[in-house]
Image (cartoon, rainbow, N blue to C red; front, side, top):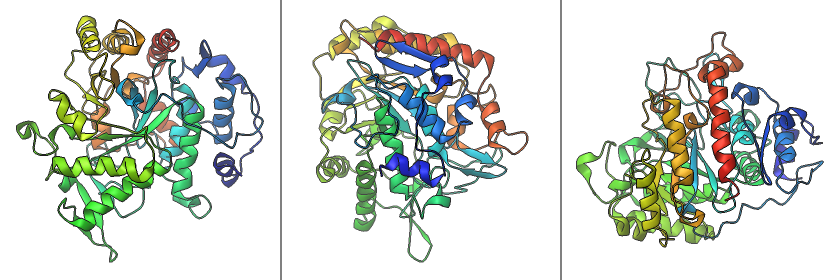
Length: 437
């Protein structure tokens, strides 16, 4: 039995798939590319997993409908250097988790349910989903807290499995965390998406859980800690992830530390170079993409480190500035800077029009499609958040916006409603023009 069917069986859902009429009514079609748009997230998040899988199969690019989910799923093939020109879309899988009273769980299932509404990869470049959370956060993992109480996603625990916000540990005896991640990756790959995750490298933002249950602050010069970090990331790659976003990548090796806002020591340049090399080597996967925050400026430094791209200092509002950079780096297929639609520090307040303008420039500012630079988006760039929160707040805190303690109420109130639907439709129209370039 393949892993997706095993997932459905564990939740006592039907593995028999049928054409999903709701999907047909909401699908956008660009050539052979299909996805759902003109929606608000609660419409997806309240569906059963079987309905979500039916939706993905109904959107199948090859036009074949599968009565049961197929056994052998391959990642979309864009060559080894696909990361240089990909669109990276970070999904805060903790924020869309099931919030039931004060509990937070099953964020990975919620992300699976969102997949039909993510535009698949284009002819000339990949779209890649980045998960905000993988490892447990240091304080309050598995729980939501009031909006004003810090519960940062930037502080993680190693040697303690995976986040209870994300993994469903109620079924872990039947479907391991490894299998749950693998099922997610198979479904994303089937939809024509690459996948990856965010990681942190600031030592004081990482705790190592000991056998006696105590926590030690991570130390890059501790061989046991170093190997734990390395092996934890190799294990995730073996689950099907193909990209790693490295928070504070710009500052690796003590570079530009006057602008460093993380907490604690960073790996040396040689240590990070070794980590990236060993992840590629030990996983046996050649087509991985590593990229980082503001890793621009001294481009050779980042290329030699092993990165594919990084959020850049290009003005995303200025079409000609983006196009100029795209032309300048058109022959740089190992590393090139990227365009920021928004990042994890986005504090909100940006108009819909500006967001759409930034997306437009990231998708179309070049001479030829093969010149395109990478771009970086957040959940809010596709599904607008409610007005009194923002991307960064949801990274730093984990509030429930439910008015009755139910997950549905949280999902209804986390995002904007009618204007968010209209905005999502406009995002789809931009992507629809780009997917066949």
